[in-house]
Image 1 (spheres, rainbow, N blue to C red):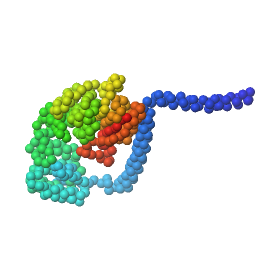
Image 2 (image 1 turned 30 degrees about the vertical axis):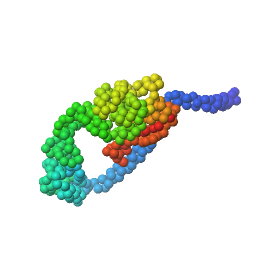
Image 3 (image 1 turned 120 degrees about the vertical axis):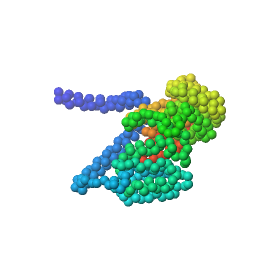
Length: 443
């Protein structure tokens, strides 16, 4: 009896050890079946773990700094807690000083030497103005008046206004300064008539949904000057385009793609081109003028496609095929039909607006690039973009790599593209490198 009790667990452990490889194999098969995009899932998990480690270090550093500040406050509680008088009799306590176009400055509360030097630089700037140049002065006060000197070419008037500001300025109300600036802009006679721009009017498009997150109202309308017509004609690299400033997406035209449209056109000569997420047909106009044999535009908006046809006619392009529908569904239909192209251009909208959407956005980018790769003839070109700031250039390239593996295609990167030079990237804000593009040769 004792021997039976002793050997039964050993037998069970032996059976479990023998079946362990089979169990692991079944688990791996389940995971592979469950995660269709396992490579992207792994990359995103690594990215999240790295982000968590960085966040933890930042939290620990912030806690240490906070503790140090508390200790310093306790040590110096007596002097810090005594009442202090704010000096305003000699002049306004100013939060902002702006001289239009070329010069701006800020004040440091209580730092009279800094503020005195800043005012000296402002005076030097005014004295150095060329004849005919106009400038505006805005000085918004915390408890006293708001000094506004309208746009003028009178250096004496600007210098007199500067003399009304004393070195005690600083620490004012930012909202008050912004409201004074808006009032200055809205006053038509005071708007700059000289300089880099001489606009006929200013039209506000403060209707992006992201404003709700800041508690700001959604509104749009003319701010200064004449209200624009329904369609405004612009010129870009010798091409002409009609833009709907009032109802179009964002500014009504994707100005950050202007260099990329020209570069993509170099691959369109004699090609059958598919322009997916076409909007108002910018890539199609460039491709048509570059000698494309045919261009197909796919877009969900009938209004955008109608404007694309007008843009083609405006530039003397031959008629091109317009397809209204969901890009994913249309491309799947072309795949099932066996329709092929020489160039496929993908310029989708932002798929990831928050970190929580990064996984689904990556799958969306992989899906649409996978479909595009299956529609390309051997030796064709894929021109693909992502405008999601949360999707890094490295991750986007890996997504396209994963799509190429699933499609069974060999892919070379010929060019890497980004937003135009008037959309610079701030080093402290890497997400400002939001537009990524690849020109790929596909075999």
